[in-house]
Amino acid sequence: MKGGFRQSMAWLHTWSGLVVGWVLFAIFVTGTASYYRADITRWMRPELAQVAPVAAADLPAVAERAVAYLETHAPRAKTWFIGLPQADRPLLDLFWRTRPGEPPGHVLLNPHTGAESAVRKTMGGDFLYRFHFELHMPPLWGRWIVGICAMIMLIALISGIVIHKRIFADFFTFRRDKAPRRSFLDAHNVTGVLALPFHLMITYTGIVTLALMYMPWGVTAAYKGDSQTFFAESGQITAPRLPAGQPAALAPVGPMVEQALATVPETLEWLTIANRGDAHATVVAVFEEPHGLSHEHPQVAFDGVTGAVLEVRSGGLKPAAKTFTTMVGLHEAHFAGPALRLLFFLCGVMGSAMVATGLVLWSLARLPKAEARPPLGLRLVQALNIGSIAGLPAGIAVYFLANRLLPPDLTGRSAWEIRAFFAAWIAAVLIPLARPHRRAWSEMLMLVAGLCLAVIVTDVATVEGHPLRRLGEGEALFLWFDGAIGTLAVLFAAAARKVARYRAQSHAERRREPIYSASPERARA
Image 1 (tube, rainbow, N blue to C red):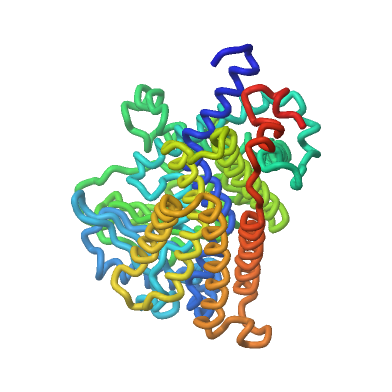
Image 2 (tube, rainbow, N blue to C red):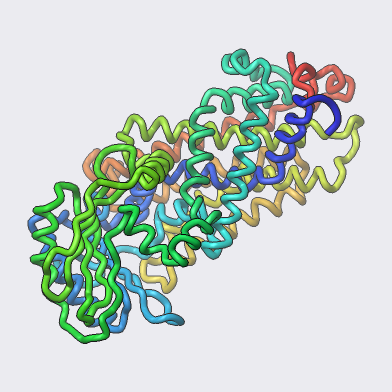
């Protein structure tokens, strides 16, 4: 780390990006896909097209059916969660927590009959969403790792701003026909600078959303570890009630749902029933957040025994809580309409490209000066680059393929979809170790393109209601989804062709090429 301040920042930018780059790429890709989480879930459950939507006037009866099912199948559960039918998910989504040591329960019901739904078991877009901030690990470990990576990402962004003396010129500079390192550097600069406000916002707000987990000491000291009281006093939830220890029957929830719908104008999303069978049973109706930046859910709490309203939470957050919920809203973009959501998605794509080009630049800058075999460490980095940049999209494509090809009644079906995802990803990391580097890039990129095309073909072949099989009739979501996957196939095929046609430079040509190094001046064309 010799040299002046700018050179030190360049060193920090380079190594901070490499150390967590592969994890950051996975976080960016799955986070970008999560902007269309509900659409992905709908696509992965094509049977939903056959379920009739539920009118708001029918919600009280639907809630009663859910309670009847839970009374029979989860009578010992401590808490019931009833996800009510929505426009994009017209099913009853039931979840319950049992006693310590017992696994929680989960089931989907037909809202019109109360019977278990025949919709295929899948995590859908929720898998990508949760992977984005948990990496499919135990939540505590996964969120800590993602948080540390996000903090390092923020360091890389700030140090990148410091070392770019030509940041506005780089905004308009992209020389794709120049030497590889020059082209990749331009691509890294353009994707980083063009969406820089988004990158800073999404990284910082991502850290803030989990700030209480990273720094819990203030709440722990002030509330003696009682986080529920903290959330209630800040206005984020209704006040919880401790069990009274006296048995009492749960009142019908239908009238409570009717009263909640008359109190809050937003869409009713779910019910939480706590302490069922106790004199302090509570039913909480939770609504969709109003349109705006703040991610806050209006709530109405009822006494579960008498049906009386205990509390109404609709706005009125304390300033600190309002700031926090606004940060969460910015990060998740629930407020965004179709055009703004697409802009967020494209910025996420640029973030993924920024991380990917940075990883490739690191390995290109350290190629041997002579025509010699790269050292083992560099070969490992090259394989990990291919395994991340090509392997992760391959794994996601296999995840979609497994959704269409696995038998609908397979036991543990959703877990098998996830296993297919990881199996493909692991294979994509191992294969480049046994192949020449340039061929591995070309082959893996072409493999991803082929898998994307296979997703489209399989979708059309297995979904009877697909618009391409019904001459334009059917749900347009399938066309949009397949169109997006087809676009990715074209992009990956073009990249594979570009790599395959690339002529390796001689040592003399590489010596004349500008080097991506710690000195910004040396990186100029």
